[in-house]
Length: 331
Image (cartoon, rainbow, N blue to C red; front, side, top):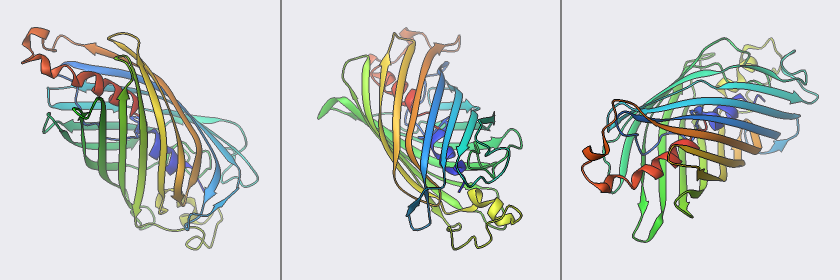
């Protein structure tokens, strides 16, 4: 089966990359008014095991997906934040069962993927930050989705959700957590519109003021859709449902991993994360998903002066937000 949906679940975020890049997906913190982050993420995803509807694995060839995602995260006000991203992806399939040629001919084929727009509102700041959000992904061109090496599923998708996070003091002063849930739906294809729930979470720890580590969990659960192989008896390119199987399958996945981030200074952060699939159905099991990137924090003339902050108590949340926003931007 195509790895398109698995790719979308990881990148994000992402955006979704992408996500942005996501995507881990919503963030519990919002940049202060007039401030933001510009992030660039490189992703290298490798998958070897295909998954049937019952979760069993089979080898139908390997897929390598590469992605480069720029993400802009900006505080419109102290409560409203906006996120924009547009991933560039390239995929290569190596194996005996190509879906479509020349896309699956053993060479890399790349294209721009989906434009991602996200809005979030920080309804509560302390001690538990609660942030509802909305996200949409719109393909910017008609790329090939019927391919093992496809970089996306060529679908318009919309999500609504909420994120929450806080420091774990006084129990663990240098630790924090954030988690998010969203419900997504896409356009109807072949009379089928699978709806999906997305749940992500992370537990982070500040080893030093500059160095942070974290554990990551990302999952997708489908409500409806078709199972392989029983719901696809005709697996030929001329069959419309088979050509759309990456768009209408009941794809479920749970990915676990970890990440590390280091603040070079007050403006620049470098980070990396590694994920793998521990359970899934109707897609590809991610053997290794590597993401590395760099984030630049900036201020515009619309930002408040330091003297305008109500109290210094606002400051400790900022390094958490920078780390979470920079490293959770897998789409």
